[in-house]
Length: 92
Image 1 (cartoon, rainbow, N blue to C red):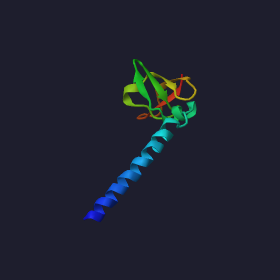
Image 2: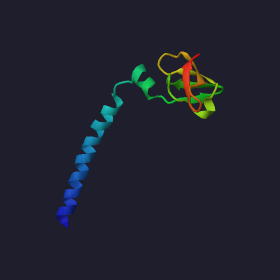
Image 3: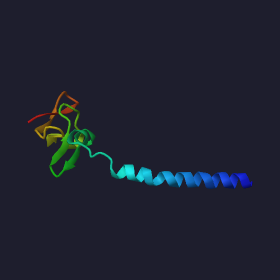
Image 4: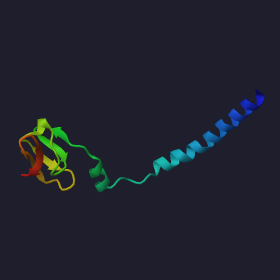
């Protein structure tokens, strides 16, 4: 029983010694670039327009005939009917 307590105390001491190093690494983590943040964004409605759309991708039912702006190029797109049942973001 005593050996288990000693082993647990040593494990806690070892983990607490590593914690400041991990916190230090998190503070100095590299800053995200514009490309990685653009790739990470999801489309969302902003009033009557949609932000962060992917050109050529399917658009949601709520976006039909609405305008959206591309996540990488910031160009304007419209959610247009592609076939009888599908809608996609096309250049406006």
